[in-house]
Image 1 (cartoon, rainbow, N blue to C red):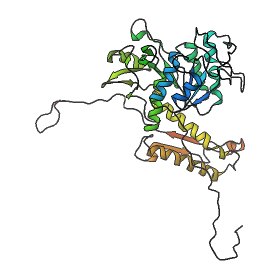
Image 2 (tube, rainbow, N blue to C red; image 1 turned 90 degrees about the vertical axis):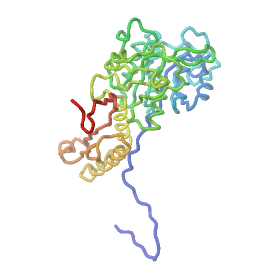
Image 3 (cartoon, rainbow, N blue to C red; image 1 turned 120 degrees about the vertical axis):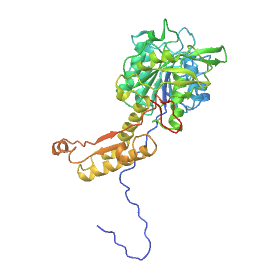
Image 4 (cartoon, rainbow, N blue to C red; image 1 turned 135 degrees about the vertical axis):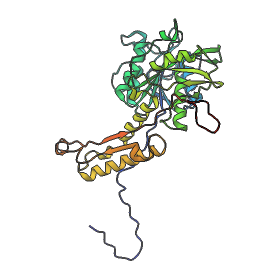
Length: 402
C-alpha cells in the first residue's frame, strides 16, 4: 500500500537494502599450539603482537625454543593475529603452570595426557565447552584459518592437525619436517596425503638471545609469510618465492637435484636463492592434481566460508524464482570482485566462474524437501611453477633455426 503524503515537501525514508553483499572472510589468523611454563593452560588466548605474547606466556626462557621462536617468527614475517594454546611446561621442566584461566603464579596439577603419552597433550580431548584441551581448543574459534604446532614432528600429532583441518574444512595446516635426517632427502618421512596441509624442509637458523644461533622449525615463520602474502597480494597468491625474515642459515642446503626428489612428493623446500633464504615450493600434501597448489586450496576455503557465512539470510525465505535470482546475483557479484582482483582466470567473468540457481537445479522434489541448490564453478589462477624459455640461434633477418 502506497504511503499517503499530505503536506508538500521532501521526505526521507529508510528502505530495506535486501541481501547484503558477500565479504571475503579473513585468511591470516593462526592457531598455535606450544609449550610454556607460564600462562594459562589449554585456553586459546588471542595475541596481536610479540609483547602481548611475552606478557602472557613468557619469552625464550619460559617457552620451548620451537614455540617462542615460532610465534616470534610469525610476527616478524608479517603476522598480526593468532590464538595461542599452551599445553603445559616443556618436557623436563619443573616450573609451575597456571590452571585454565589462571595467572601462572600458582602451580597447576599436571595435565592428563589422555592416554596418548606426550602426544596426547598436543592432540587433546573434547570435553565440551570449557573442558577442551590441546588442539581441541581451536574447535570453538571460527576465526582461525591456519594451524601450526612448531616443532611437532610426531606422526600422530601431524595426523591430528590434518584431521582437524579436514573436519572443519575452514583452515589449513602448516607442518614441520624433522630437524635431522638419516641418509639422503629421499629418506625424508612425509605425512599422509591431504589437501588441507603443507610440509616444509629444512629447519632454519635464527638468533636466540640466550644461546646464540640455533636451529628451529620453520612453521611459525612460514605462517607469518602466509599472513604477509595474504595482506599484500591476496590468498590467491602462492606463499612461495618469499623471503623468510629472521632466517640466518639452513640446517641443510637443498640442491636443485634434491628438490627434484622432494617437489613431486609435496615437500616444500626452503632454499638460499637470489641472495636470501626463500620458500621455494607451493604444494599441498595432496596427490590429486586439482588440489596440488596451496593457494588454490586456500582460495576455495575462503570462498566456501565467505559464501556460507554471508548467505544465512537465505534460510527460511520463500523458495521460488525470485530467491534464486537474488542468490545468483549476490554470489556473482562476490565472484566478479575476486576475478577483478586477479584470483580467477579468464578475460571476462563468464570465463572465470559460473553460478547456476534456477528451476533446473531446484526441481519440485528438491523444493518440496526444503532445499535450495546452487551450483558454482571457479577457474582459479595457478602459480607459474615451471617457467620455460625456449632459446635458439637466429639467422640474420630470419626466424629461429631448426
